[in-house]
Image (cartoon, rainbow, N blue to C red; front, side, top):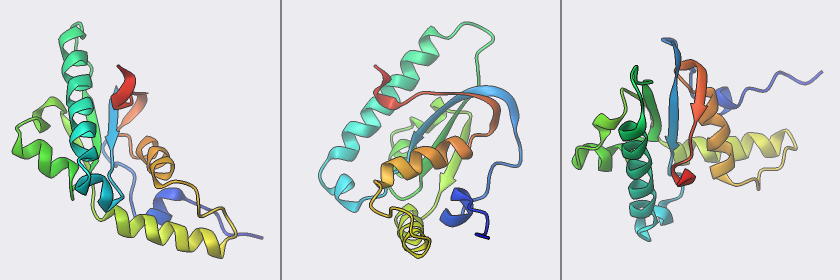
Length: 144
């Protein structure tokens, strides 16, 4: 019998212990160094900030809390430097996503799971699992 599989455990992450009843979740976990180097990251940040700003502007009271699952390597560093991190009440920090992705790929090969699955797909699932809300509305930054 195969041992149970937990994506968060495989990535070395823990689900949020403090949960709120409901909220909006965004995710931006950069796992590939070339994304930052090629300027692609600036576009991702711009879309993420624009989506959050528009949602905040359109949200009726009571406003839903918003959370962001993001890597500390590129995304949160950039958001804090530009004073945009305040758009989200909760920040779920992902440290070393490149290392976690590589660990996942290694374990996937050991388990004969398709390790060639893109890292963005893995992190989208992980983002859902890291939500700090019991009921979550997930919005991609490119929802516009």
